[in-house]
Image (cartoon, rainbow, N blue to C red; front, side):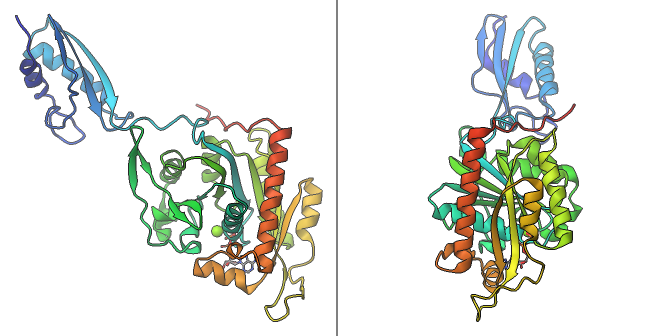
Length: 366
Ligand SMILES: Nc1ncnc2c1ncn2[C@@H]1O[C@H](COP(=O)(O)OP(=O)(O)O)[C@@H](O)[C@H]1O
Ligand SMILES: [Mg+2]
């Protein structure tokens, strides 16, 4: 018997793909690389994703259809391809990113997002290429702080993959879990869904080359932190605290989460936020309403640098609400404080990279 393409296509048209109920031909899943050589037939089946759950069964079904409808003597070789190239392995993600900085705090409301946003903006002002990822699933605040609440990041096709394009604002690249999740529903997200969304924001986005990739993590310790540690080699963590006793106790927990043996992410240092209150009309006055130097003492006790002290000033709160971080204006006291903080972070990162080996991702135990 002589084989010809129509025979093979007719056989493949009897195989239904469960994903959409169409047959393999209708679903456009048979690549146009069909080769016939005597009784040898080879071609590829194309799937949208490399992880398609029906991949194996479709290959088997296609083979069986050819044996049934054409001839049992056909020798069939089927390879699989995917329209979407695979997401890189964890650990190989973001190869063009030089430093990953996790901004963390023991509890919410201490100004973690304010520090992350202003640190990122200040790093841009120092001339670095910066990406900012808002991974705080329980309180994503970057869309508001950067006034891009209505932004809808689109996907582009690049290198065989569909990649999310980060929003560009104030010279940095930004993605927030808040673009994808309605904050009111965030707590309803099962752990797996949130983790998956986060992995996508890291691994399926077109971040490009960056000097600093700053991550605003959720307060405390959570599954999200574990996902981050398993997905990305974090260069170092910046811990934000306020001077109060309770906040300090929480900050200690945050430090332990990164520093323990299994994780081994170095602490770059502590930021003491709301270190004192300065009223707008008395810019030289400092009122230590939450106690004095709590952050400095904790830093000493933990043996980590105090990277900066940020005063409590009305302007920080207002500018956060208006979507223009104070670090954009280096002529203000607070703008200067954040520039100094950024410079301190850069110094610590450089030092860390000289003195310590690169961080490894935390392996998922199987
Ligand atoms: N140094 C500061 N001075 C004034 N307001 C601040 C300061 N730091 C944070 N805030 C305000 O406090 C609130 C909580 O800060 P935020 O950064 O959202 O905290 P977190 O991310 O830790 O929950 C926000 O309204 C923010 O504008
Ligand atoms: Mg926050």
